[in-house]
Amino acid sequence: MAPILLNCMGNEHSDYIKQQVQVKNPYLDTMEEDILYHFSLGTKTHNLPEMFGDIKFVCVGGSPNRMKAFAQFIHQELKLPGNPEDLTDICEGTDRYCMYKVGPVLSISHGMGVPSISIMLHELIKLLHHAQCRDVVLFRLGTSGGVGLAPGTVVITDKAVDYSFLPQFEQVVLGKVITRSTELDEGVANELLQCSSELQNFPTVIGNTMCTHDFYEGQGRLDGALCSFSHEEKLEYLRKAYEAGVRNIEMESTVFAAMCRVCGLKAAVICVALLNRFDGDQITSPHDVLVEYQQRPQILVSHFIKKRLGQV
Ligand code: R2B
Ligand code: URA
Image (cartoon, rainbow, N blue to C red; front, side, top):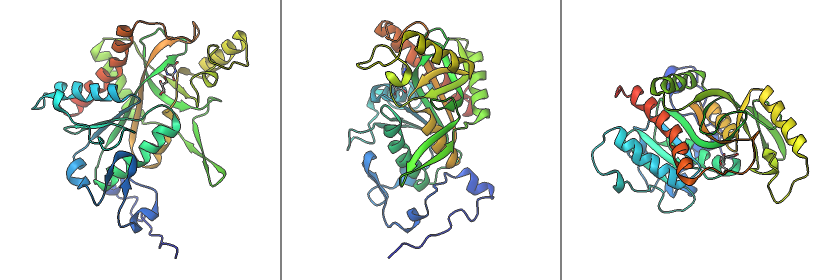
């Protein structure tokens, strides 16, 4: 028997509903239990409102180690009681993603690429919904290849764009392509830029971020196992990207922006450029330099969170 479709969008104009995390799936209301399989969490096995109801900031990034380091960093920054070394992985029942809760901040890893982050986002958005979280802001803190930028520059994404520089994300559903807008929250991006001018620690720009489905050919690299284009063709593509306002290239921003937008979540993407792609393809900076670069988006977002909490 087909499940009854409930109209869960009936009250969408009230402010209260707007501030809530909106799942756009009427079938969810008909389910007795929701198992968030890749988090090893569930609505029957865990009290999600009690565990997560006070979350206001969700920070996601590719690497589990980096997101653990961020959780420990924000713990210190917010001067919370207890030892940051003692933070435990809420998703320890699975090794797909890691998750740490630090006061009102959730730090989660998402792996590499659109399919990996999109699975995580489905379960994260449902988690925030089941936990009845309100007024949540999401940040993707990542690494990227710079387009005409010095290594170490932080890019706050204006528009997340696809391979043809359009602000859209294409999802195949039942064999058909659905196109969703990838617009991000302008207010949050400007607030982050303001934070960087207050910190004056590292160069920061606002620009478009191109999201690709591959690190090598998809980003016009000449150093993959396959390469079917010339050096000149690579540079021409990067020049076109630059003219379209693209300042960095990574692999998750479009689906992140699209899913957050549909579900009424304010979101921002902050990625450090590890290299200038006009100068090469290989990431040659020493390990300690790369570690310091990767702390830059974390420092920026930490300042944003502290400001929002009235701690600076
Ligand atoms: C940035 O870095 C990763 C590839 O090295 C990928 O997840 C991304 O978006
Ligand atoms: N991540 C990417 O996706 N591309 C780069 O060039 C560097 C990091």
